[in-house]
Image (cartoon, rainbow, N blue to C red; front, side, top):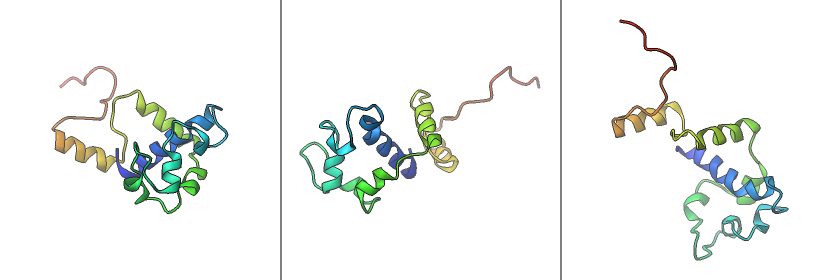
Length: 112
């Protein structure tokens, strides 16, 4: 997953308790790393520093939310076992792994 998609995925996960109506806000959910990210300090389980390099204010980052399109893309890919990222990112992965990672066109193979 490339960087922009990674950050959307993190936002999606941290907003899940609110979306599922389990919590009024992400930081109120006891089983989340949100508070660790907001306070910019380790909670003994989560080290927030790698992700905080990409975000100035974690709470603002979460409050920006996700579009329906971004949510649908994440949900679609979580069940596909395919990489999530830009076309260039996926092509680099294909080169590194020597495997085709995007699905082929459906239907019968063209006759030669």
